[in-house]
Image (cartoon, rainbow, N blue to C red; front, side, top):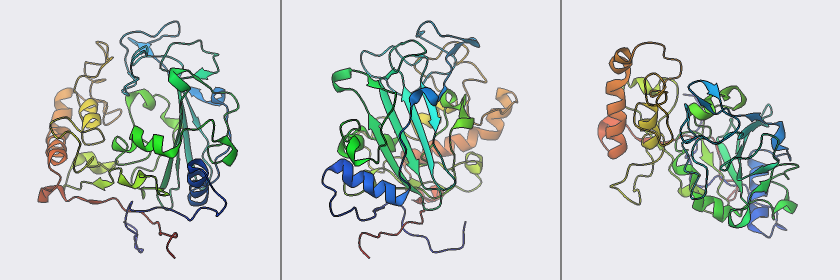
Length: 327
């Protein structure tokens, strides 16, 4: 790729926090502001609404059991399923930082509601790969207010944002194993509002909280057509349950994008072409899709099961970070 010195991909992407930082929120926020940028406060209402459709018709009066492009993420017990309207995506990116906000609805609310079940922020430095993760949830399943959301890098916003240890435990990085910003049919409806850097450097700002333990390897099998537009990660090399399908770009997501059943999918979503969402806008028949991508998908699945095979050409994802905590 680029002819420059490459630092190791995601061992410790940390800038030393200010000496007066005390709480985990302050430590992580300071490290992220230094490695990427200070993140501004925002209002979820300024984001674009992610549509929910059934047979192409937009649904706004309920959360249907199935839909054309379900959300994929497990919304947990008590949710209204995978087809809840009025989640919003907000792009706060600048010339030097990519910042994406998801204000997520897991229960049906009106279009003008200020309440959301979860607010997630991914911040990424496309020059170095440094990436930070922030999350807000209400206590005991209560919603959070999406109006006048405080900056996640503001030391005074500790009461709103979850501690970094909680975010690590939520394990977002096991799905986002190849890229900060992952495509799905759900998010793909508003993809023009999502920053992308699919082949750029990628690393996690750690600051001592365990983000660096998230999977950060990619597979590079030769002449694999799936790798023409994006990387594919390997998931965790030692998954907690080897008998279960791995999350991430080589596991569950790859299966869902290439024809495997998806929870919450209606008849249209289970039928070609919506059932084969990758690559987007392929435009040819299912037989043609199988001819072009079938063998490559099988190879990805094999390498996901055992990425140490020589054909998989596994390596750590590159970044351009320096461990400035130990100058």
